[in-house]
Length: 464
Ligand code: FES
Ligand SMILES: [Fe+2]
Image 1 (cartoon, rainbow, N blue to C red):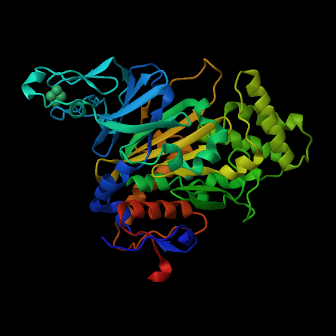
Image 2 (image 1 turned 180 degrees about the vertical axis):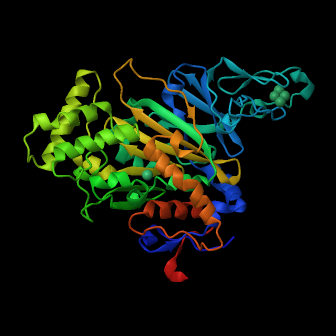
Image 3 (image 1 turned 90 degrees about the vertical axis):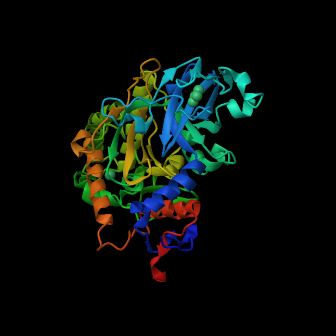
């Protein structure tokens, strides 16, 4: 594997080359398992998935399995999911109908403790051994430290539960900054699952993730959206993380260029907003809500022709907000400046990308499949604010990598993934050339990966 010096954040403005090793090399994938995944905060699920004491879920990453348990009404703990006696996986993840479920590691349930099926060692919710058959045979060597489940750092933010296997990790909040402060106004903890779908794809985890890290692909991959205007984007590194947004003026973004406010181009903004929102609902099933679509449908009755676009946007949002309030859905207080600062989508290093709105969010999480550089576990998840007591509880839906098995727009993104993985292996391909203005989130991901892995990609093209 080639060795290069790691570039500083400010050099992401330069044209760069990302060597293909990052996507196809078994050695690189192995390095990720050794040096990346055990040292980063990863979101493993939502707090509402384990509401009662004893509720647990499992999370698989590489060859590690993490057991996450609610140990008190306001406390969650996490442990390595392995019995300290002779190493049996403590909570087994059922293979499931498609045989692949075990790799994803979704296993939810409620227990008073954890019983190892091999020799019966038993552990309390706090990880301490509560029963060891014939413990005296060890002649006093079975200390609490030797027999308890090995703890994993755990914390919450945004309603998500996060774990970190590194005992010396920085606190979650510190790790997430400055993204956490940018996104706090959205109050993700008030949202609940709308849908969650997953699959195992024949591409590297970064190929799948990067399909969503930039809107540069919209023009060619989602041509049906071009009628709403140009999806020119700005893209920025924020330390470990990244952010992008619409940039139709090739400069400072305005509130009308952020996710929900996105100014749909057209003769009549009243009509264009409605068409775009309706299309989002029909072809993504997320990135808007039924309330927003209904409020958009009312615009032609409520506003006279010729109303300026910015005013139409404000009216539309106020109208949707009022309708939601009437059914018990509260909107968070997000100023236009905060909305603009949050942009379109935020990359949380290493493997999560969020597209937020005031009452909804769509996000993607991608993980490697074991140590295979050519496969990944891909998940698309939609959240929304619901009236109290009316939250749906959708389970995971498995879908093949056939694009038609996914919401239309996400399927379009998926249609590139396997083709990219094939192309990356071509003898005729020299490395990725991310757009220095619009795809900086991609370059920044590789810059930070290189730091974690102790190798140096990407490299400036000028240095070739
Ligand atoms: S491996 Fe768990 S009790 Fe023996
Ligand atoms: Fe896309």
